[in-house]
Length: 435
Ligand SMILES: Cc1ncc(COP(=O)(O)O)c(C=O)c1O
Image 1 (cartoon, rainbow, N blue to C red):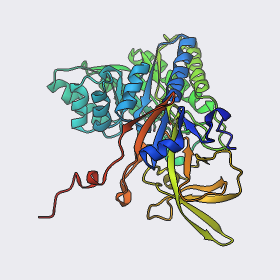
Image 2 (cartoon, rainbow, N blue to C red):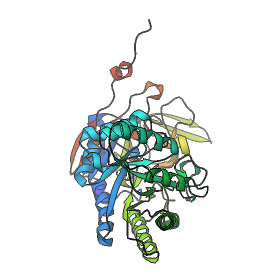
Image 3 (cartoon, rainbow, N blue to C red):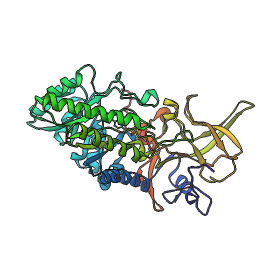
């Protein structure tokens, strides 16, 4: 049996359960493809992160990275759990605010925030705007003047640290579209411009060094670099950093080759590094902010599919096709992300072969899992791909005009549709007839 599945995850019918709900029943009731979250698992992970900060007795903010997965219910869950969120678009900001997330708990990110988006952030009193470039400093200065408003801001720094992860999702190295570069003096100039504007209240600095990171060293180095910068800015510009935000990127296990630390170990190491280096430099201990996305929702998510056709290329490969694919999870096609999957209607069945789990989209690259061990399967079986909670549904598309799946929250044996499946009518809802 797949090592991620515990005996307690299987019910009397021999089916996989998610949040205490029978996965096969969920598939039948709500249709497939279906995205299911075990919300207790999400809440537990949030609690674990909180606990690290409480144990270390530091001021903190956990700002969930909405891009990993966001909808109304998710923002409500975050608000109930007492944490904030980072948003990167008018869309994420809108849904978060509509859902009742307190505006002051939102951080607004992005490397090309539009004028309208910045106006929206100012008018809604979004807690922090993370400034990413000089153009944005100018735009925000204009908006604050016109609105006679003030804003709390942070500066996103590119610390020049290249974390060990897939190169397409690295963002901390010098050659990055994000943030102010340290080495060339951009960060110093940004600081001076912001300090010169009394409408901007600079909280501190931010860095995000990449995603799906397994090692402490990158985070420790980034934290140290930000404290060095804080010391430098204190000395040269009399600026005291009240916040150090180290972003997200804490790695999770997708397959047996992944051996991440517990996400909370990363946070503990970051806090200890900041405590040690600020003490050495005689700086006050700032609040520590983190922006976990994947580590909060990834392991809690499951994509359920129904098995359909099969193609055997004798002596070469067997393709087992399911009724979803790159439209509901583009990560395998986009950056060769690996997943594990089990047969939800019989997770304990003896493995008898290896297949390629294919999607139904018109791309040869639409393969969900390249090499999946499976028992004997038949059309109608339900496959559960594991750990799909981050960057799956949030990157879903209507490619081939397939419908986006429903999203279900499951906990303690109760399931609730929190985003309904698209309907065929949705597909024409934005269109006009040709004139
Ligand atoms: C600025 C920022 N913060 C946080 C995150 C979340 O990263 P992860 O989901 O790997 O924790 C990202 C992801 O790209 C990001 O760009």
